[in-house]
Image 1 (tube, rainbow, N blue to C red):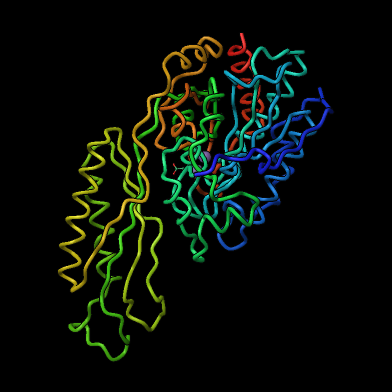
Image 2 (cartoon, helix red, strand yellow):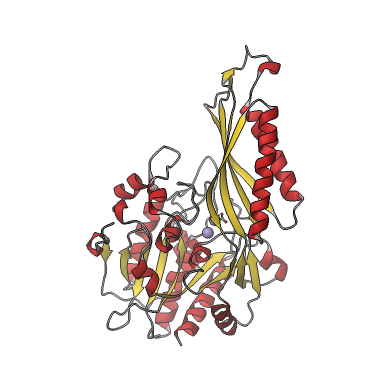
Length: 423
Ligand code: GLV
Ligand code: MN
Ligand code: MN
C-alpha cells in the first residue's frame, strides 16, 4: 500500500487563543438540538450522518477558537493539538471521546468527554499552564459501531486492530460500504488503517466518560477512575427458513425463522443467566423481507456478549450457537453465526492509574461493562478513564443523565489529572 500523504488530511489552524472558561453544560447545550430523534426519543447520531457531521463542525470550531491546531487523520478521527514550542508531538497527552451515538441514545455518552476535554483546556489556560508535553483533544469516529457494526472502528483502524480490507467492506444498513462513505467524507479509503506515526506520538490517553451503570450512585461519589472493562463482542446470527404466505401456509407446514429466532433469544437469556457475571443481549432483529402477512425467509439478529473472563465469553457463545442450531433444526430452519468484533477484557495501565489516583485522591476505582476507545488503545499506549456519575444509572437510552454540578466537577477533575501528568 502507498504511504499516507499528509496533504490529504484536512488541516485548519488558528493563532487565536482564549482564556475564557466555558462550561461543560454550556457546550452541551449548544448541541442539544442536534440529532434529536422524534421517533425513538433521545439522540440518533450515526457516524457521518448530518447530525454527527454537525457535531464534528461544532467541535472543530470550538477547538480552533481555543487556538488548537485541528487535523483530521486518515481514519477520520479529529485531533486538536495544543502544541509545545518546536512542534514536537512525541509523548503527547491525549484526551477526548466520541460524538456518534447509538440509535435513540442519551446526550452524554461521548459528548461529555469531548466537552469536558475542551473545558479542561480552558481551565489549564486560565491557570496559565505552560504545557510541558503536547496536549491533544481527539474525537474518534464510529465508537458505537451503530452504522457499520464494528464498535470503536476509528481506534481499531488506528491501532491496526481491524484489517483495513475488512473495514473498507463493512456495510451500513443501506448497503453503503465504509470505503464509499469514507470517500464521500473526504478520506482516502486506500489509507485507512494502522497509523504508526500518530500511535507513536501518544504518551498517554485519558478518556472522561459518563458512567453507564449504577457504580457511582452506590458509592455516593461524583467521579471514579476506571480499573477495567469487561471483555465483549458482537456476533451476527442468520436463521434461514421458508418465506411463505401468512394465510395459506398451515402451522404444521411452516419453517418460520422468526419463531426460531424468538426461541433462540430466550435461550440466550437463559444461558447468560446461568453464568455469573455474564451479560448477553439481542438488541436488533431484522426479519427479511419483513411484512405483516409474510412468513419471513430469514432473520438476522445481533448478539452482544460480555464477561470478565474472555474464555468464558467464548464458551458462552459456543453454547449459544449449539442451542441455536438445535432450535433452528426443530423449526425446520438453519443458522449461521459470524463474529463481527471482539474486545478482550482490559485492565487499565497500573502506572497511569496510580498517577491519576495521586491526582484525584477522593476518586474510587470502578470497573465497567461498557466498551470504549480507551479500551481499544490500551494494549498500545498507557490509557486511563475517568467516569462521571449518572444519577439515572441508565445509558444507551434517553434517560441517561448527568447533573450540571457533576459535569463541571468532571472537567475540573480532568484538568487536574492532565496537569498532574504534565509534571
Ligand atoms: C459502547 O458503549 C458499548 O459498550 O457497546
Ligand atoms: Mn461512549
Ligand atoms: Mn455507548
